[in-house]
Length: 186
Image: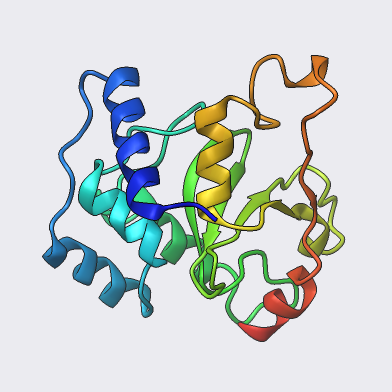
């Protein structure tokens, strides 16, 4: 089991060493504002990262998005835009409660499921869509946010530059709850 206080401290150290222009953390009022706009609370560990480490700008590859940075940007803006496009349509794309925290480029996102106890980290990879079901575009990247951060800190994630050369890298698996979660928020 991960000591969350220790994990947040190690993330803060790594974040500062990776980015000398790290944004300032957000305060409790901004966390509350984000929750109010989302309609639910951020996963507790995700809230701590924004409150104690920085307002994005750290993490794997393209780094975490800022929490609130305009109406259509940042975690809250991206979530609201994606959810609005998923409500009332036959094929919803984005499940309720999954906030996009990082873009991998090419339309791909890492998202944290704020409705799951461990804050599972999901991969949205839209390229397989082809007009079928968005369900096939959702993958379980990590069973929890803490585990995902540990993978990043250790340099052992599928997203690492040398990942394809190693045998010990676990690739994201299809997200078994995708169908039920996508249809639940319609």
